[in-house]
Amino acid sequence: MNDPLAPVIAALAKNSAASSDFDLNPGSLPQGRVLRPAGVLVGLLAAPDGPRVILTKRASHLKHHPGQIAFPGGKQDPADADVTAAALREAQEEIGLQPENVQVLGTLPAHETVTAFTVTPVVARILAPFTPRPEPGEVDEVFAVPLAHLANPAQYSVQSRRWRGSMRHYFAVPWGPYYIWGATARILRGLAQRMQDDADLR
Image (tube, rainbow, N blue to C red; front, side, top):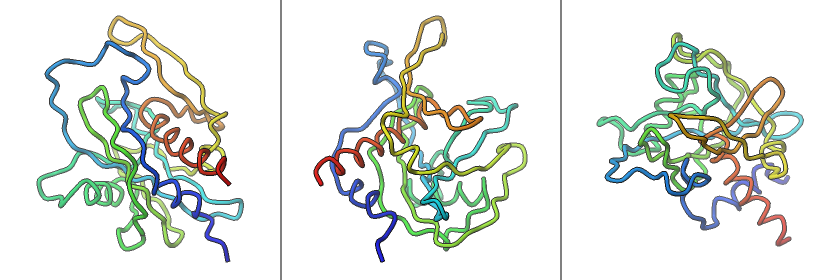
């Protein structure tokens, strides 16, 4: 039986450069910046119509990125062994996903954010269905998007908005009522590009 995540596993084995919120905004990279490590979980859950990616909608009252679509995850704490441990811990705290229900498949290149984090996306298979438990006060909603949608580079567009007095450009990949953009969309587009390149070689 073919593994539905085989294309993802093959994509993870490929080399590619790190990404950044500044990729589409050349010349805006802050000088002397100090980056903090963080990990996010790109959790892949089996579904009848194919694998789905678990995402969250952040609470609207949060100081940073209120109401935005994001992966479960956060900064690496001193008690975390590494960014993978941070991603698994945060996923347990934010959506109730137990670490023993996760098989880590690999990582994508780190992504630098405008908020001075270097974020490592940890790609993982969710072994069994689970009932998400959004963390009160931090997560408004947990939902799943078909990987087939997110793995299609044609679904992505470059959009822009004014931020801190200047226009900034970013990737977006809307799905239904959810506007997925910024770092989350950029990380997903990197995975999509790797999967597309692999498909082109077959």
